[in-house]
Length: 174
Image (tube, rainbow, N blue to C red):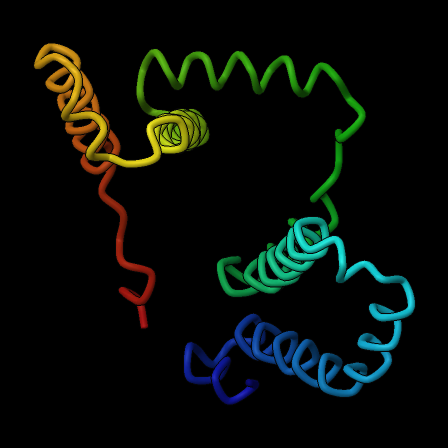
């Protein structure tokens, strides 16, 4: 994993990134028997949804943490991000300012956070519709005005969020 980090770049950030993943894999292998015993002892694996959700959240958090080093400009920047990761967490004014920023981003379409929230909202609505109708084909049973409205809404959403910003490919600089 450290070699994989070096393959991405010869800075300490990438070496630490690879080292973190090496640690994760080693820790996982070393503690496997202990984790299996703990899981069986607690019986948490019988609560499948809770158990799987917990595993997904832990994996996401560990990977997101490691990627701080990959995406930071330098090691100082990475440690700054880590040190300030939860700063202002209990400062409620911080949330009010962010909600205002999100609102402005929705209005102006120049706030990536707002665009992400809108996209998540659309995905949730789409999931609810699919769950309620059990199939996308169910939509064909509705009048043409409803079908076309849904289709135009989906097309508009795809166009809006796919061309709003042009980002460099993550490996552009490698």
